[in-house]
Length: 117
Image (cartoon, rainbow, N blue to C red; front, side):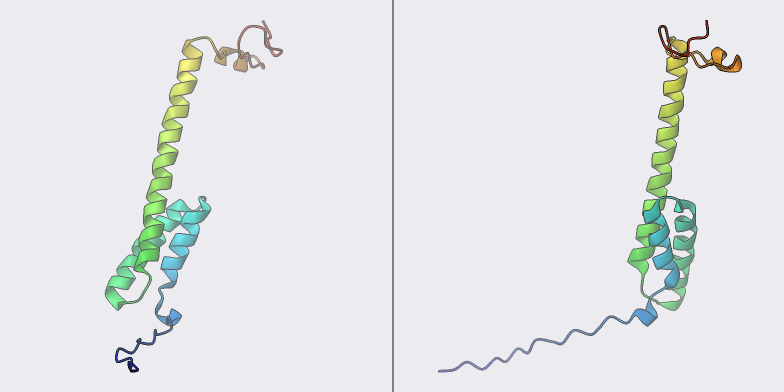
C-alpha cells in the first residue's frame, strides 16, 4: 500500500532585495563599527519613518542599528563617568599629582621615575 503525499511543501519565494530600505542597512553597518553610532541613530530613525510610509523591508535592521547606537552611547557615558570619578579619586588619595603636570612633569606617586620633586 503506497501512501500518496497530499500535503505539498510550499516553495519559498526568494528574498527581494529591491524592496529593502538602504538606510536601514547603513544604520546597522555604522552601529556595528562603533565609530558612527550617532549616524546609526539618525539613519535608523529616518529609515524607520520611510519604512512606515512606504512599506519597504528592513525594519529589523533599522531597529538593530538604533538600539546598538543607543547602547554604545550609554556605554560611553558610563565609561566616561567612571573614568572621571576614578581620576578624582586618584587625585584625592595621592595616586596622581596633577599639580606636577603644570610644572612639566607627571608624578604618579612616591618612587616613580618621573618624580620631579
